Picture 1 (cartoon, rainbow, N blue to C red):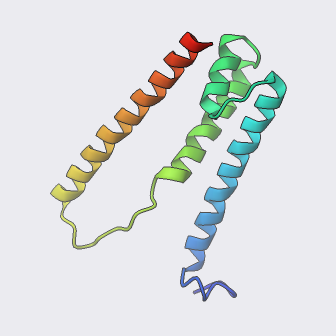
Picture 2: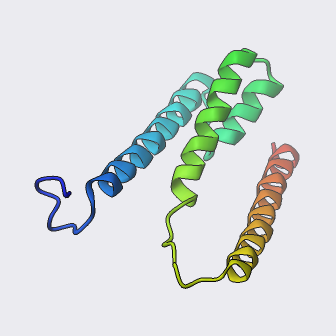
Length: 124
């Protein structure tokens, strides 16, 4: 069944709701980053970096940091995970190879984030 008014999009109702849920998580992530930048009088580009600053300087309690970490993980997952198509023709070996490639790319992305954090310490 399609939601009224969504016919032009050609998407089932659950896909529309999934997109809205994803966007809502990202909105909250952005709002939290904005609030922390205002509170700390900084201009962090990533919520994770603002959280590291808060932790290092004891500006937020552990409960708040855990809440922000969960939010950040969920919002990042909303931006990056489950956005492809499931191909019923694809065999399990090909899926496993894709997952391995994605994990390697994700690890590289984590390294880039670590590098950014290290460089910020040197530059700051």
